[in-house]
Every structure is written in structure tokens, then in C-alpha cells.
Picture 1 (cartoon, rainbow over the protein chains, first blue to last red):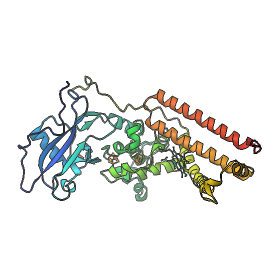
Picture 2 (picture 1 turned 90 degrees about the vertical axis):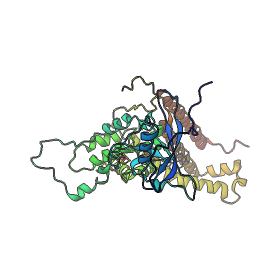
Picture 3 (picture 1 turned 135 degrees about the vertical axis):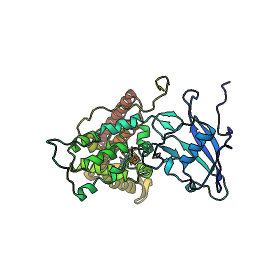
Length: 261
Length: 138
Ligand code: HEM
Ligand code: SF4
Ligand code: SF4
Ligand code: FES
């Protein structure tokens, strides 16, 4: 017989986690995976104290600090800026540092359960962190940098407020991958550039100072480009920066359709 | 730490050929929208005539079909519906194959199967519409 894999019910000693006044006990289920021991991911549960004002990230850090130091996840800024801690929280892609416990509490007196899994569609490396390489490869492929020909100007490249406004929304991207890994097309077809790459292409395509629009539009006109998007708005729902992702994609389609940026 | 020693299956291995610089995907996207619009009229009209008008399905028999196809208008209607629905549905299936086929060979053969079936149905359907003989029953 194969040794039983730890399951949902495996008890963890969480008594070391400090329980501040006003805290309640919630159950955090984590889709854990250690490539050195596990054949496949499995759920483990932790009953931990939480304040309504805590973020999911606080609970994860507590579990890592007091229960199991091997729990692996990315985080850096803890304030929704770096884009490291995208994960699937209760089935939707969110930044763990931006989700408050009070928004996840169960109705009535029922025990609150919070499920945390890695973002989908990228290879799970260990626990909650995934290999982001395919994601960044698509990002790099759209040439996400200013392309300008001719002589360097002697002063700054001037732009009107109206021209700046056109791509303002897409400058806000923090490359967290919440959008791309919520996209059903990306799940089934990993070669699709994905919404994040298109958002970052949009940021330059509609920049009046940039001269590489045509190259980028050509790239996104291809089989794995914007035409694969099915307008399901998953990406827009997932974006922690509130970027109108699907709208940006539609604007790129429009630019291709009418050959006009 | 090296990850080389880990034998992890990669569900995603980007296979992204250089941009082909043609507008095939653009036109097929546009075609889906335009043919979709035409199909709303053609298919709903067809369903209405065949299933609701007068006695609905109960009046459909050989003579009914023969009667309709005597008119070039209905011949053209059915021909347009056949071609648009086949190309629209076929292109939709192509999209689905692009989505779900993991291996290039699977992708290739599924698409071949699709294209052959599209060609066959278009050929047989078109042939019947144009060569239909109302006297065959007699
Ligand atoms: C009633 C009129 C119809 C309209 C307005 C319509 C519209 C559309 C549109 C706009 C798409 C593209 C979706 C996208 O790219 O995201 C689509 C996809 C598709 N259509 Fe239609 N369609 C109609 C009838 C049909 C018929 C009669 C068939 C079958 C022969 C069909 C089969 C498909 C398939 C297989 C897809 C691909 C689905 C996918 O991309 O996941 N449609 N349709
Ligand atoms: S709108 Fe397009 S890119 Fe966004 S999730 Fe849907 S299919 Fe993916
Ligand atoms: S568009 Fe939004 S969800 Fe997508 S990578 Fe950028 S910040 Fe994250
Ligand atoms: S840790 Fe930086 S965005 Fe959440």
C-alpha cells in the first residue's frame, strides 16, 4: 500500500500563533505541493486565529512562521504594489495582501473556510508559487519598451494630457498575472499571449511618443494574439489594479480592424 | 537551489512562431460576427417556417420541400444558410481545436478531419440544392 497522503483532515498544531483580542478562528485550506515528496497537490487545513482586519497574507505568514516553515509562497511589498502574491483565493485570483478577512467571513455563526490555491495555468513549483517564465515570455514578446527611431530629442518627449490619457489605464499594470491565469483561453492554450501581455502592448501601442505600434500590432494579429480572446471578462474581474483589461484588448482589436491607432 | 533536478511536468510550453504578418485571424474573427448576424435571420426564419408557420412540422413532406425548392429564392436562402453555418460552425470548431489540442500532430489531424467534413457536407448539400429532382418520387 502506498503511504496515505496528508489530507484535508490532517491536524496541525496552530497553538503557537498569537491570537490577539477580538480574533476569531478561521480554517485556511491550502493546496500544498512539495515536488520532492508529493506526486500531486493536496489540500491541507489550518485552524488559525484571524482579525477581521487581517489580510489573507497575514494568515499565510503566521502559518509559515508558527506552524510549518516549509510553506512556500511569494510576497514582497505586502501592499499591493509588487505583484508577487497573486493566488487563487476562494476560487478567484487575488493578491493575498489585498484581501481582507472581514470580506471572507461566513454568514451567521458558521466557521469561515478560506481556500488558497496557486494561480492556474502555470506550472506549480511548490505550494503557492508557480513558474512565471511562460508569463514573462509572453510579456517580453510584445516588446514592452519605448521604441523610437531617428535622432534622440534634446529635451523630453512632450505629450499632451489627452494623448497620455489614452493609455493611462494600462500603465497601472504590476505584472501580477492575476488576469492571464484567470483566462480560460490561456488555461487551455498556453501559447495564447494572454491579457497581461496585451495590456502591456496596449500601453505602448497607444503612446504617441512610441513608434513601434505597427510591430506590436503585427505580433498581436497572429494566431495566438488578440483574436483568441473570447471577451469573457475574467481578466477584468481579476485585475487587482482595476484595469479595464478586456476594454484594452478590444481597443487593440479595433486598431487592427480599422488600421488606425 | 537548482530546479533542474526536479522532474516537473510543464503544462505550458510556449510554442509561438514568429508573426506571420497576414490578416487571416482578423478576417476569421470578422467573419464570425458578420455570418452570425446573417445566421440570426436565416436560421430563425428557417425555424419559423419549418416549425411554427401553418401546421409546423406536420406539413413537411417531400412535396413541401419540392415546392419550396422550386423557387430560386428559397434555393438561395438554403444555400446561404448551408455555407454560412458550415463555415461559421467550422471556423468555430477550428478555434476550439486550437484551444484544446495539446500536441501539434493532434491539432493537425483534428483540423484535417474538420476540413474534410466541411468540404464533404458543403459539396453534398450544394449538389442536392442545385440538382434536386422533384419528379424522383413519381
Ligand atoms: C444564430 C446566429 C448565430 C450567431 C449570432 C453566432 C455568433 C457567433 C459569434 C460572434 C461567435 C464568435 C465567438 C468568439 O469569437 O468569442 C460564434 C462562435 C461559434 N459559433 Fe456561432 N453564431 C450563430 C449560429 C451558429 C450556428 C448555427 C452554429 C453551428 C453550425 C454555430 C457554431 C459556432 C461555434 C462552434 C463557435 C465557436 C465557439 C467558440 O469560439 O468557443 N454558431 N458564434
Ligand atoms: S476577456 Fe479575453 S483575455 Fe480576458 S479572460 Fe476573457 S478570453 Fe481571456
Ligand atoms: S493587468 Fe492587472 S491582473 Fe493583469 S498582470 Fe497587470 S495588474 Fe495584474
Ligand atoms: S506582496 Fe506585493 S503585491 Fe502583494
